Image 1 (cartoon, rainbow, N blue to C red):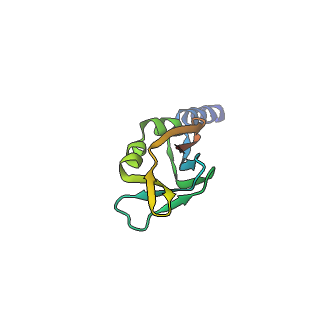
Image 2 (image 1 turned 45 degrees about the vertical axis):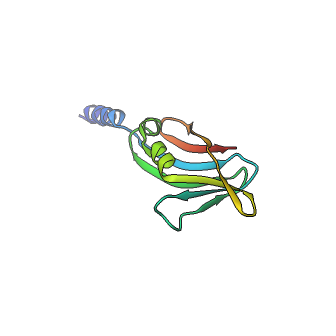
Image 3 (image 1 turned 135 degrees about the vertical axis):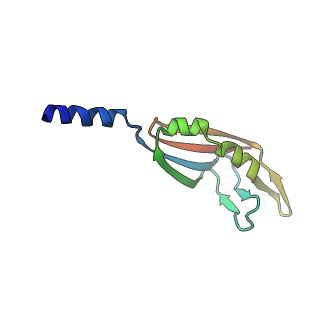
Length: 118
């Protein structure tokens, strides 16, 4: 009976999806400070210094972090709902359009980072 219970619980644990952890961040890979502004949110301006990273959110759930990253709509949402600018001179700013999402980590724990370049 003990062997049956041990085998039963082993099969249940192996068959379950793991508890994943996935963080979302932006990394400034330029030489100047950048500012991220989210549309529709008046007080949402975020400043990221050169070579620094800003963590937006950490998401937890059942499944695999790498699959969640691949299926995620946050990539499109970030592009459609945010504006990235840098200060060119005392009275001028410029939009930063070069950037790419990249996944770092394994299948269960990972980090989705938007690398911003000039």
